[in-house]
Length: 347
Ligand code: SAH
Ligand code: SF4
Image (cartoon, rainbow, N blue to C red):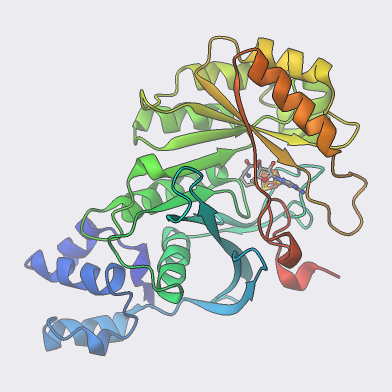
């Protein structure tokens, strides 16, 4: 069976002629979140028969949903080959207009991850496999359906769940293409952020495609010795190489390049590091997002003290570098950054 969510509109148009047929199917799948081909009433009987026989909407299933006290939800998905992965639905408050709800979906790109960051739970157990484009897209469809989010409501996508998106490059690009399709989910690339641990050649390749997506670099350390300890891949692509690839990355004139800085108690939370960070990002239209380390069982790292985080932020702000502290959502259901992992593996 082919996963129907794996197909771009153009691909479906080549299969089902004339092209309006594919548009009808897309509308059922992505505007009304319909899974049963039989319900697609304006699609001809013959086409529906082909869909039923050869295509499936059930290659991934929602296995479990956990709801946090802060309103965020963690979704556990099962694949047809028996693996599981997670995505998180986040309700963000708009600080200017408090009543307006903002939705963000945090997607996984792989089952596990091979980058092996010392602080990340996903890293334990390595990479199991890449997710297909359809498996990535399905996370959005099922979360929009489950939360009754109408097609016209804008949502943000962040690739900050399980996996290193740039290590699954081809499927990531296809997923972005499907997610942005005007006849489908129509999520503007501007609203899609790819978070990477820094695979320099892939950052360059992504930049050259000029898709209009946002990029977030997980920097976490300002010198190579520490960064290599935290993110082993830094030995292959060091800070200067990554910075070089970022300088070539096209950014929307109204946006900034995001640098994520995971703060770990007594590891990288001192003002000396803040000063080096300032120097490193000199010349970038940058925004630093401070993430507080989210603990889990059997980790040697600790969450930093809030005074230190504030002092770090203050230092950067005073020196003209935009810096925010990331709200930690879903901590009570282990849905926060770096806490996602295949359930079966946690023993
Ligand atoms: N692989 C990509 C995207 C997924 S991880 C990346 O590394 O950027 C998303 C973010 O969660 C990254 O910034 C990562 O460094 C951060 N993270 C990982 N483990 C964490 C933890 N235990 N606490 C807080 N953030 C964590
Ligand atoms: Fe992979 Fe990102 Fe976790 Fe590092 S932080 S192991 S790159 S998911």
